[in-house]
Amino acid sequence: MTTVLGLIGVGRIGVMHARTIQALADDGVELILADVDVARARQVSAELGCRVAEDVDALFAAAPDGVVIAVGTPQHAPLILRAAQAGIPAFCEKPVAESTEASVAVLEAIARHGATVQIGHQRRLDPGHLAARQALQRGELGWLHTIRAITADMAPPSVEFLATSGGLFRDCSVHDFDSIQWLTGQRIVEVYARGSNNGDPAIGGVGDVDTAVALATLEDGTVATVSATRYNGGGHDVRLELQGSAGTVQVGLDDSYAGRSAELGVDFPAGPAHQTFHERFAEAYHHEMRAFLELVRGQRENPCPPGEAVDASRVADAAQESLETGRPVRVRR
Ligand SMILES: NC(=O)c1ccc[n+]([C@@H]2O[C@H](COP(=O)([O-])OP(=O)(O)OC[C@H]3O[C@@H](n4cnc5c(N)ncnc54)[C@H](O)[C@@H]3O)[C@@H](O)[C@H]2O)c1
Image 1 (cartoon, protein in one colour):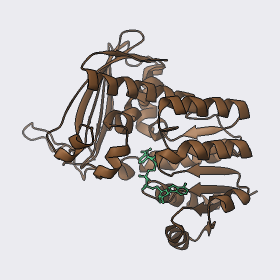
Image 2: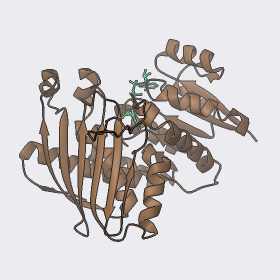
Image 3: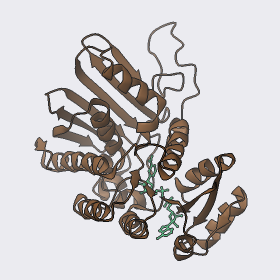
């Protein structure tokens, strides 16, 4: 039986999800897409050879089995609610809503409707992150004492985007906060953050920083550093190191690592380095859309429930507050 997936928003990430879904055609998946920019929607549908809806109303009228919401953040909440009211399972890019308060209202509505919503923290479907989690759960690392997470973009996005992104912690590090909580099964309880702004002054002009580090403390006292920058000219770098009493694993340490060894005679990594998040997480994004398909078909558990995604946003809020106040901040729950 064919599963029809509707996709709303074919921008930077939406077009990638559209391609991934279209690649599932042999698995009985049919894609229909919509965008407020109708010309763009038509262009992408022509490229991919899929159906296009005139607008979002028409897309919902087609009664898809699931919807993928890949529009900008302000439209997440209304579209999640619309899918919930229609009884259609939804996948939505992070974050759930523009603010944590608004996200909590969305969570309540999701619960009221008994709706199925998967949030786009793709690292939960990334083979490296999954292997690290398994190593930790099997006790192969002994007891965990230190976590080091890095998310480094090659170059900043537009200042217009940064002005509405909520800041580096909410835009980038939220993925690390989610990974850490998901990997360890523990909550981050306190964050102390510092940031700097030595790149484009326009970034400071919109109240953001281009580089930041958060020291996060987990429930059992384990410490984690979460580091992010918009300026890693060597490539897109996402790594996460779990260091335990019996061993250490590092996610993202392969030949695409966006750095080089300073040791003489060491030619690791062989390269080329990843340039974008699309490349770095190509496999994860594929698994993420397949997971949503299986969720829609009732074949698997939800890999990223909205409540857990909102909890990571609460940590990002605390990090932002710490950055602004210069003091450690307890995560409010
Ligand atoms: N998980 C990740 O790694 C990751 C990476 C990048 C972006 N994101 C998230 O994805 C979301 C989209 O980001 P982007 O960079 O692709 O944005 P974008 O601006 O490139 O694309 C958004 C698209 O949605 C369309 N759109 C806006 N409002 C709409 C509406 N009401 N109905 C239909 N279409 C509408 C726009 O015309 C545009 O084509 C953001 O919330 C962002 O946080 C997640």
